[in-house]
Length: 176
Image (cartoon, rainbow, N blue to C red; front, top):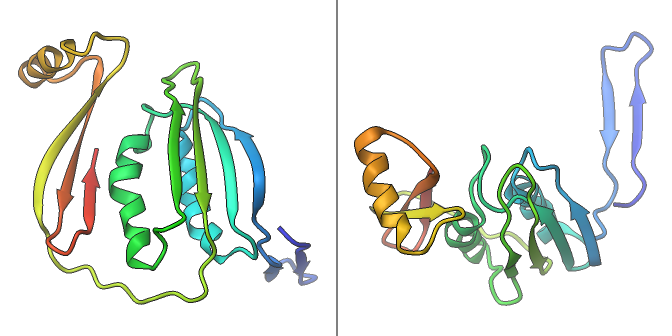
């Protein structure tokens, strides 16, 4: 980010913050704390990256599935398609290099976003239909469906579930 300026009135009642220009860049990296999923940081970058002076490319390390935030899979299937509605889809890259779960993390994702010349208005009206998705940690692939059935009966245990709804014009919505 380019230089910023901050000023406060003498009585401390007014703060003026001028953020400067968002630069962007290539080869950036950040290690996220294990208390939050990497998508927590990606959501903020998603708002700023298209407005940067240069395209952004960043590697985030940390938790990819788990914690209070949406998983990387939900981010990829629900959040990123919204950018296509704003005109960003061709050079947008989101790759999950390694997966990581709490408490240690260890996951790694790569996010690249081009810059926008202008923003198109977006209208979201239709509700769509719901479909389900599940993730399991440290289980054999066939164990997920068994665990999911047991969790429905008992109300919890060892897995994450999320919902994805697709509206007719191709705009996904999620719930965790």
